[in-house]
Image 1 (cartoon, rainbow, N blue to C red):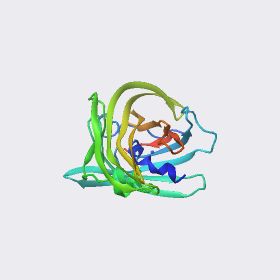
Image 2: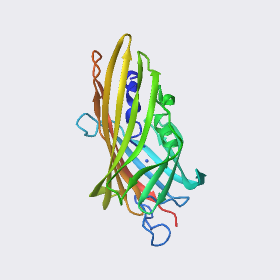
Image 3: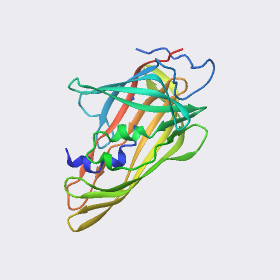
Image 4: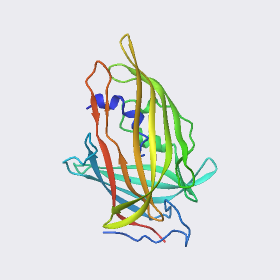
Amino acid sequence: MKKIKLILLFISISFILFSCGDDNPTNGNQTTLLPTKPGSYWVYMNYMLDSNNNRMQRNPTIDSTVVGGSITLNDTTGSIFITYSIDNNGTSTGDTVFYHTNKMKVFAFTNLIDYMLKDLLFGSGITYTEQWMKLVDADDEDWRVYEGEIPETSVIIGTVSGIMTAFGTNSGTETINVESNTYNARKFTIKTLFTGNFKFQNYTIPLNLERKTYLYFVENIGLAKTITESMKIEISPFPAMPIPGEEQILIRHHIAN
């Protein structure tokens, strides 16, 4: 299991980067992809996906996210989103990520990177400038979400280094079924790339990886569905390492007035 963590860094930003509640629009008639009123919350069911991106036969886990207040970073006021995760053993953990919205755009602060890398053996090795990153944009066709350098970092049996980038694409709209309702969601594709080298003893092995995550936002409700594709890492002469995907489905929400 630890070997799988070797290469997971490049996919960590793929986000992932969270009975029906109140779905009243925020701020009157203002349309937004992500409501940010304190007290709003979302509850998700999480399923692991096999190599064919089908749900695996294991118990799903539950995440819940609540808006806890506001914070000002780099002269921009954002909202504090606190996510609580419960695993199959009933253990709960909490993490905080900052978001802000501008019309039909959603930005995440770079502490999202810390949140996504917290369980990885070399997550602390990544370098980046603290900033707001444009995560999704309903008014643009494509954009760069993030680019960062991974310095040469020890990973159990060698070192890894390279450049990790993430790009966003507006993928149009799609009908989805969540909370026993049908919604016309805005779909966004986040493609995460890693280009670098894996070094083991006297060998330097080029490493080029790619993974996609699909984010489905419903206007004035928020993130309703996330699919992160499974993948397989192959580094000769080591055995292939399958990486399961994940599907996250909204099962309950409440939008504060």
